Length: 231
Image (cartoon, rainbow, N blue to C red; front, side, top):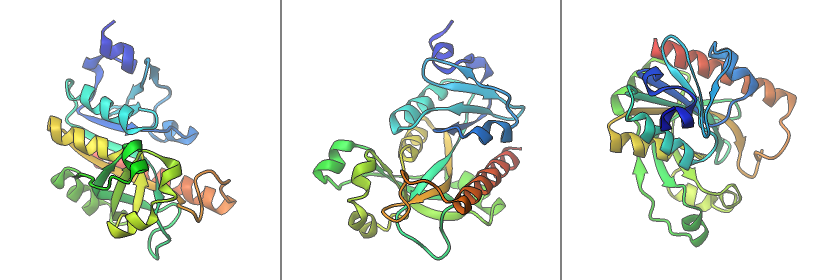
């Protein structure tokens, strides 16, 4: 068994041209992608459809970024990151359950830099052509500015910084995917569903029945959009 198969659960030769990376895997997502089960590796779990490979990376920029670097040595050419994000503040057109796509992402994934308030962050971008095509096909998806963070605790103390840089949503993986894509000449985009609002509807609080319905609906819509786009 090769190193890749040990880590990912499937062989390098099984990787499709397009890979969908999911940091977390809600129960409904696997069936929505029409995949019965994933093959488990030491770090990642992977499975194929006719058109793409689905990989459960786990949460963190480290795992997602490493996955992209490994995939650069396979037949993968395109990566779509699909997961949840937090909204910095309530907005008229973006709320719980909204689908959003980052058109820029600040690399704030260093816990230490956040803690010490070292605010000279680099910015990374999705593939220009790929994101334009995706947004043209999905008019309900909002364009946003994103920041990938290294601390859930410190995000609650950073709203002034987010406002200063006009950051609308935060996540834990996006900047590493965009950075790896730029470095390895992979085409990358991200699609998120808004699952919480910082200091208003925080991630650790129980969802209301209405918010649960919104999230389920947005996840279904996101999966449908991704599958249609890849085809």
